[in-house]
Figure 1: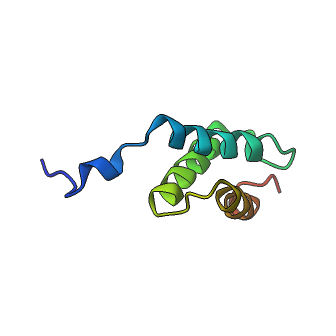
Figure 2: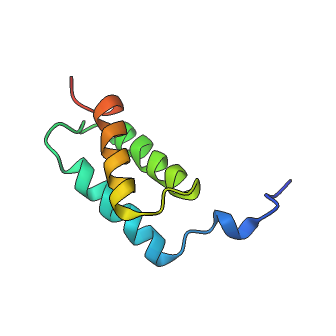
Length: 76
């Protein structure tokens, strides 16, 4: 089994989780967001990945997350 060189970068601290959770709840509460559990899980994974890749500003995470969600997870 191999581990990432920087295992600490894989850990999300409580305050970081709260930021991601707030963005997730805010975007998924919009009426256009799909009710599909699978798609909601995919969006959550998208937000975590974006955060880990440096998108840590709450406003930017919400803005770009919302735009991505509109494109990928909206009810059509």
